[in-house]
Length: 108
Length: 496
Image (tube, rainbow over the protein chains, first blue to last red):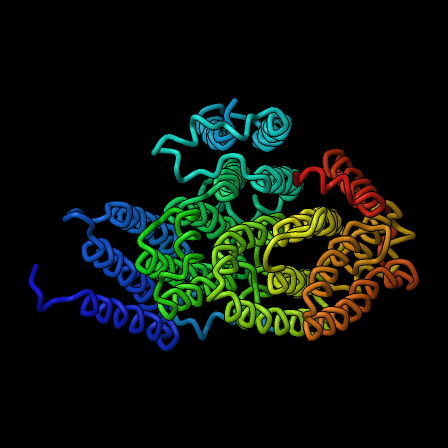
């Protein structure tokens, strides 16, 4: 294993991905972009899962539990996108907008 | 019969309903709904006959993700099944509105197109909820939680020609996916810090104290954010009123009971790991206390000026989440006294009582919805003269939600307050009592408007028709609320 690349490096990158995704969700106004940012947050979790699995290796073998979890996360994310995009398309057909600030029918 | 066959039966029922919808060429698709109701009644019967402590299965590697012999999981499976049953009964009555808002006659669609899935989706959500009740592994918690959440995305946005429903669907989608992101990242860190995905193993490692405390608390914070979204705790409760108002009424009922129960099961399991760890318990309790206080204050006080009944019930559900968090924040440390109730018992009891009273309120609301225009509190005026049965059902539900003695809700609150009292959580106790008093006002305001004020002049005064299935469900819930309110040991026995 290359000693220059440690667990910390992977965690920094995954933390950065998570933070960028979260910032995007909070700042951007286009639903599609918000949805992409949400997927980025899941990718951040995937990256750190693989890193934890690889660097937590006992007797040379990584812990495969984490890598199984990763595939579940990818599958669930795909299902979420399928449903999510369908809802966004249905909304676009009635309101003709993807701007979240226009979605304000219900108020206190 | 092993306990996991219940989930398999429910999934098969859902698939069967989809197949009937596709191939059976029914003249009235509401038959599918009645089929689902019958199937769920059978599964509820089976719930009492399963061997839930199957030991040989528990030892096999494959079944490590399933908690066998856990006392609460059967109770939570019961909550999931009963709430799905009542939601299906409501959906059958709600069918005309679904038909009007989904199928587009100009596109040449069948007038009942899309009705079959409306009955099948709650079944899949129910199966997910039942899995979650027994989930014992981070992977199974994640997958079952997402099964429920994705089914809910579809159900909330189901009325696809209604702007309110779609708007609620998008809001729920974005915030639900955000909470999933936090949950997954938190689980990753929990795994990274402890090196295990099995909850009992994680609990042992956390309790031993040989763990990076900062990392473990970071994981807890992330999971706490995700779960606060799911159960509607302040400051992550903003989506609740909008989604409750926009979603189809039966789905609102499902969200407020089943989705909240699911959130609390996971929350309870993960928090229990931290509460058993001596080094972390102090910080975790402080965070839970702060969130509980905020949730109690916001939920109870913002509910006061609400005029839309569904929004009122939404803030009421935030307030009830506050009481449940109050119980979790005052978890007893160390060994329990004999016959004392653990946090798990108190939370389960409260959720059971909450199921009964909230479902009753929504059943009445969906019966009224067909004949009263709008969901404003003012439109309930004079209901007692027009439909005494519905008015009495609503009165029982409201007194129970407020926590008046001789109802199930009273004992739910009493056990929470007792837990807080024993743990000397004085601030929580004071805020909880003030919140409960505010609750008296906004719940009983509805009762007063039904019984004391006159119906607006010029309105129709004919009795409101209640379908037989909904009527039976209402009578059952009313009896259950009163019986549990007189003799709470009945429900406690189900927990043991």
